[in-house]
Image: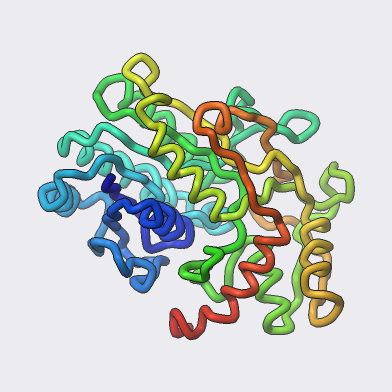
Length: 332
């Protein structure tokens, strides 16, 4: 199989690419390198450019007519940034995706695997969600993913472009073989900030301590990024069974099924590294922060034969190991 991965030079896209290549598949990457790293595209056919560039996407398919599916990971993803710059987020995540869908339609691509987000859910009272839970995005980022899904559903109903949308929860960790990981030395998500605080002696802030959870901190479903990558492989392998002409648009949650609060994440981190160079303080929620949720759905296991295998401790260890080699690998 040959797959096109938009955003394939980023954290998640590059890890998905590695999982595909480990299967013996060929990978084509389209990335503008606004946040991705060229180093992460080694071993792929790499095209630097914009997903909204019709001529470039057409050229990719002309030069790789055997592309079997597109994995769409390219997006802006920082929630507080989306609150400050909603126009930029809707332009990048929604408007450019519309242009990409048009290019895929013209190229005759019939399989699209979409990198979506569980942040669009309205959690149930117990903070669980399934694919049928109500949607109520609390940030422009989350809303941009929901809008993309609606557009993709309409396109799937009107054309041959079928879409399988994977709603991610909270990816953490890095490639266990340390080929990729968080490329940003100043990450925005909790585990990345913990690693940063531990490595450089900075302060880690628990953003929000008055949420109605068991300990007051927000709750998340932390999934190892390698497990997430394996979910994409399974989705590609089972695509035609799951997305059919009768049901051309399908949504699946991709999480561990376990809710972990930020305080519990800190405790797990401390258990891995031991007592020492970690300073933790409490602060207010950031703009766009939400209480969080975790999935109770087993649809991904039922339809794809996939379930998460790695633990939070694994993710912490791999994130720490990657942080040690990142300056050498990326020069930063």
